[in-house]
Image: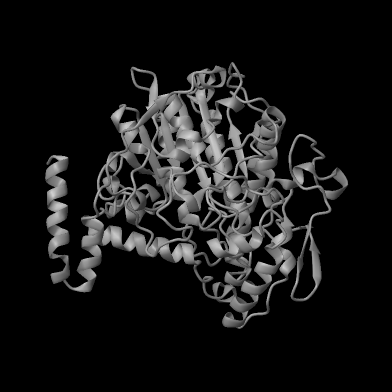
Length: 519
């Protein structure tokens, strides 16, 4: 069926939707969602020396984690050794004297080292709606994080019948003891300490910018999170560039771009099919050929790979979600990143692979750098969001490098830098032009600025101690199942708003016809 015929069919379905029961109207909204046109405007491709370095990259792998700020996760790198830091002067991180106050009580809260790797629940999950982020930023003062957290967490705790958490929690940071994998990668590869989230707002608008170069008119999530935006993946198809979207659940691309909502199954796969139980495999739950780990081992890594972490969290005595969204255990996120890095570095295509690790938004946690302005088609999106952790992992970056040291404190990246990098490397036409896509993408800085002229080769630093740490962490959960009765753990913790929204979108996709065997 041609695209025109498909559109006629969608229009017809929408035309009769009002005659159907409410449940079926929702399904029609998924099946017959209008497919927006692919923007056709082009701009000259970057052709400077940094852009030339991208020619050495054959495989771009993207992992977009959840809800942590740069200072919260990597700010420790600039702290003195006696304070648990690495005393790095090339990282724009914490200095040690940062603090926020709560005007309601007059109490002042300094930055503090967190040792708990998993939070207790909803009351300890900082708010990150558009309104809350405005309050946290307080213009450029960056002094409203404690006040916002104190107000909202106290209300949530009262509703849940729990004591309110300390407002100082939002000023907390981790170090190498809690983030051993990031600590290793930060010393061996590139820390991008000028990577900002794309929107001073919630999860989905930021993920939309990473995939579609724009949000859907709001800085907050819609419910259920199903959108109708063109994605960068369409241009990969136009240029016959191989790509695959790997996930533990239906890929987030399906929720963003209707062109891939219920089709294109060969472009979607699991991160690790071994996570499926024998019953799921026997029931036909595994239908795609290979998973991310299989594709690496077989030397079949596509030109572009996008990895969604595991968003859902229904654990009782073990980890489940590994996306780092509070209250998830950040050690589960470390385990995921080490799994990806270890597989890539051992694979046959490592020498020409670029792994990008970033976070969709700051999750309400403190950061000291005011977000700069941004070029954008829409007036309400002409400021970037709060700075987030970002690492470039590749033989094509210098060990121990940082974006600030290389490019200065005013050279910024955001999620659309991923799209600009993909376009510059893989989507040039015969006239030397790339898709403009949106104004934000057209103005974005690509990541070639952070690469070396030549690869360092396939050799990597020994990371066996990290493997041993993660194995020990996993063993602790196995041991707990025998040492602690399941009842003692209580029921699974409640789901976050983001997780509930993702479940709702998943149900609608399955009801609309997405086969159970396809992520």
